[in-house]
Image (cartoon, rainbow, N blue to C red; front, side):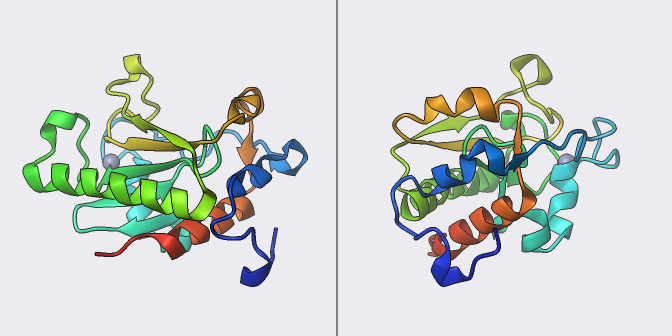
Length: 182
Ligand SMILES: [Zn+2]
């Protein structure tokens, strides 16, 4: 999808992201961005993403201690994550300033998702440890998944599919454009 900004799905249009979830517009790409090991030097994607441009890294916003980034393997359209820059695994390892900014970015993510897509609700949380379902357990990340009434109809599909990179680029820009600033 390579539309001009004025032709994009309208900011503030309810369920805007759902239009990105038409199955025939999806492609499934396996095996990308998986770390080769548990350490920061073992290809941890959450350590390498901030070294990229916002566009290439799908970064929506950068803070002093955390950043917000789109999930490449979203549970739902607009699924983003708030991630500390520091390579730490456990929530208890966050210092006070990181804890505060992670919470603040979670609020801003909710506001941006509401503004961009009219999200009706959210699933927010973290999986701590691979036993709890963390895909990249070595680097803490908070999931923020927007929800709309009826979106469960899409879950069986998106559970094993991946959006085209261009659609993620459009979603990133939509959210970055409405990300609240202090
Ligand atoms: Zn890391």
